[in-house]
Image: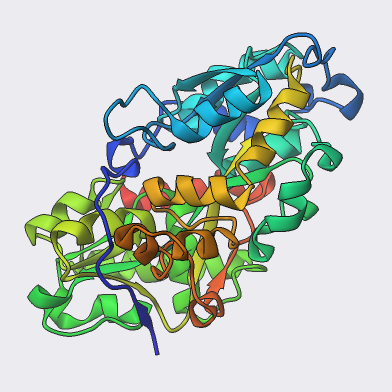
Length: 399
């Protein structure tokens, strides 16, 4: 059977709902992703003098709405404020990342020229992290400084194909790409990817426009193991999507604005992110999120320490702070994405606050064992595949 979430315990403004789907740096990102020889940085050229012992600070770049804030004062970030108080390390927290490609374009000139980005910690999506790792633009972390990461990191996220053993990346938050639909308006359940092409959904379905966001779920609908998919699997999906476009079954391809169509009723079913649906369910419990019977993609957005960072040890300590289950639970209660620290579930469950305790039972924050059996981390698109694959996909989508 498929797994369908119930209504959430609370509502938060969706972070992804504010972001643009396509960044301005796609061309630059594609070129660098191809592994331009001059862009690669060898291991011996990645580190700078670490000033952490004497300079108690660091700069951290993140996405908007991706950290807990105080309900009465949005300038206060309780989990981050606690870190600063406990360690004496001052954190310059900058909400400057609005799109993976755009941010890639912003900091790539410094990285390819072996210069500092003036950032000690960044958070980007794993498919983009893969480019940074291949190009040698991030530093290997010292796990001796990160006992919480070693102990508590979700086993399902521990070893993606692009970074075996998570030497260079640590998940900040995770999520699921599945299917969202309006149960009341549709009048039935959706259980499989192929259900999107039913006659009663013609013209009222959207797919994600981004290649990296869309392809894995569609492959899973074909029974493909996305941990080791092939070029033939990709082109089969493209053939199928082209057919559905021609048949008028797909209303449009979207970025994160698919939520508006689903709320308005213009769309009855769509590819969706689990974190967004938690937000939507607060106002409309008839909106459901389903992990199809064939499976869904588990993804992460991860923390990395870029080359030439001046405060590496401080950054490593901050990462480990967020892997303390108590801290991870406090963050999860606010952001409502899949928590990469499963031990945080018990912390939330023990809360005296009924609303907070209920979050521990939400499978879109803590997937249960049945759901996890249907989740997989897709292998990333390699540098040699990306240009041709993007060209074909973008032609279908109309980019």
